[in-house]
Image: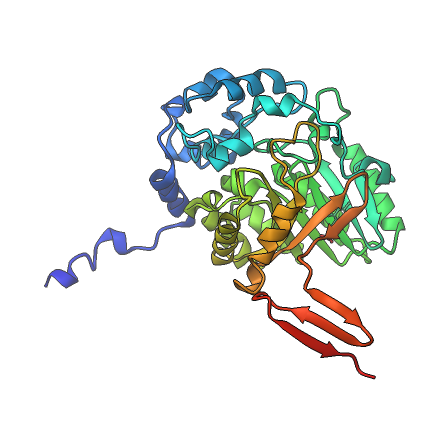
Length: 395
Ligand SMILES: *Cc1c(COP(=O)(O)O)cnc(C)c1O
């Protein structure tokens, strides 16, 4: 009889997506006294999340035990890249451990105020490849379109931190028009990558205006959105947004995950909504010292991404942005990680490791060397176990 219990129970009824999201939030979020007054409904409201971002040392000290190194970082970062962390992302931080991978990505540290000789404000040389405001046209058939200069949470390793610096001219709608004209008049552009800042912090209306205008250009075959919102503000991925994205299909999305700890049930819920609406998801990961620079940490991240249907796309060598020395690893670290992925795990879980050529070289793939020798039509290659094989070219 007991097995029948609950058959007519209310809990058997299907939960609405909103209820599921709220229940996930309740289960997963660490209680943060700073937001004592907030309800689960507030917490699920992305505008509430933005309005209540942590931006001061005083607020942050109520959530985590700040180290002197972190305090120095917060004191000095304002002129460079200010601190802002969504309550959701902050709830994932370890209050005691300063080496928490979430914490290291969004809490400034004193080390970021130090500039090393090789560091630059625009390490990828984007500004010199910008034909009109807001566009970077580097490759023959695609452009990068920067539509926003805000992010939900500022990543301390940001390669584009220069656009958040105080006093810089804001982009705004006017610059969109110039960019649209440029894309319209360049028939070779078949792929537009919308990024920023974070495009998903625009209103639905503004985002739809961009998607609609691009979709009307006959030679634009598809649109990509580069965003970290599903990771730091998954509440933004709601029904209305997904409906818009679906309307302008094909839209692909590049997310930015750096550690398995970022893949919560709430994040999976947001990614499910996107994938179920036909939006293919990829992840771009930045190789970061102390965060993901070991083969086991990186492999675990790749596995967790596959589980939520996000295809690892790139691992980036951390760009030599000003104040990034404490984040950057040697190139050999990246090569070693790739050596430990390829062959050792699912091919779908092996992204391409790239260095954006400092000064404006674009993405250059870096790989362990699998060619032992290639002479007189004989290509001697090695596999992941270091066994050698010879492929003979057709005569
Ligand atoms: C990364 C990037 C792209 C897109 O490159 P893909 O390899 O096609 O993903 C386009 N333009 C610029 C300037 C870029 O930095």
